Image (cartoon, rainbow, N blue to C red; front, side, top):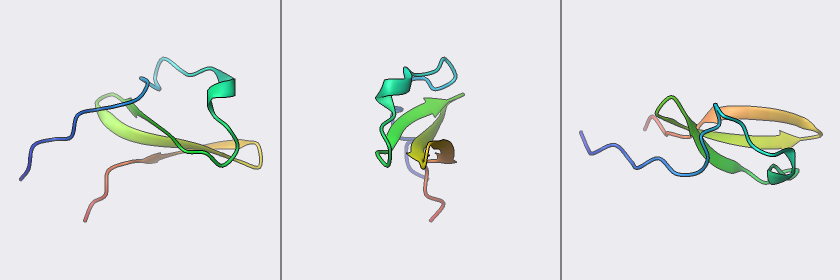
Length: 54
């Protein structure tokens, strides 16, 4: 297995300023040592894991 990637972006557990998350623009961050992407779609914020399992 390879070396884990360095985490980038804000610690999303702490939170981000609402204005940092623009409609349709992904924001890469991390939670508890895991990479996470946030995206706002039609005003709803979604979070998904940012590490591909392939």
